[in-house]
Length: 464
Image (cartoon, rainbow, N blue to C red; front, top):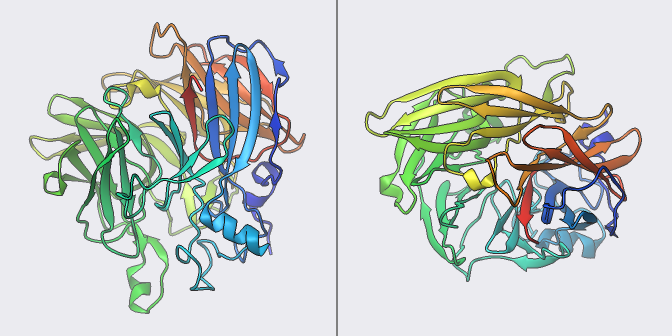
């Protein structure tokens, strides 16, 4: 059996929980940086049962606290119900998404809710989230210890997916929930500025699809319905397999922030998939959406060169893309903005929902496992996107998603720093790179006390 690329090298999980203060730094840390950079990651605590998928591992968060030119680090497993059950048993009990379930008596169902994917910081609370839509888990922002599940005073009766959006002007938290096994297949949720769940509404869709992200503007929310779901032919045989339907259009649902299911206006576009949005905003009668679009997620002819990133049968060749939805005419226009493969895009979060001048996109390395070898800064114009600068990771190093940490001065949208973790498997070292967002030059490197694996999504929690 060939080696699983997501269990070795830069992806090799760590199992040691570490805390360390006064970390060694090359280059002075900017004194204006005061907060927590935290990233979520998959880290199976026990050997997986059968085939392992990168999305399967138990959640582990890595945190870097920056203040007064000093840095401290800690990593902690997210102690979900599934994690605790397996720890008590001393072995893995759940199979992953590539294997058929082998037990039907496990709490929570056949797939373990790991909270391993995303993070959101709202009203001083840090929540860890799962890509398949599950239970949010609150983490202590001073230690990263798991405080417990969050159900919003019992009002969250279903799931809460990864990639919610915090409106920086209203401080509302906008999210969605989806399922590929039972109705409703899609729900829309809204949390008030005070942390109260005030909307959790079913949205009618024709079929269950695997979804991943959403977007907001100042007045609207954008839900997505891509043609990635159950293989229709296999379902007729009583079997389940995921397939990408090239004959079904992509759909985008635009609804007023405080609207109801009846207010959703659906727009169709060319078949595609998108893991991550960049941002969305309004221009006149149009809602504009930017994201990293994959044209053909499961090609009929698979690449064999070893230079295309893959997740099992899925090929990840994402490109910066723009959709425009005209609310008056119902028309959709779309176009690719760049031909360089990038993913895990971020902007200055204070611009979320308005037209951003800049975006920061990790560049996909030409390898069979998803890794990033640099970060591209895009300047977004009225009708263009131009790569204006690139920070290249040091030779032998690969990095992850970069969160934007603003300067206290806030003289311009890009007045701040990008923070990202990087790993060098050959040297068994990891570090945090602090990059000047304006110049895209390395400001400082914080050397971590242990090698950590590459992971998923991150968040900058200011003032923590």
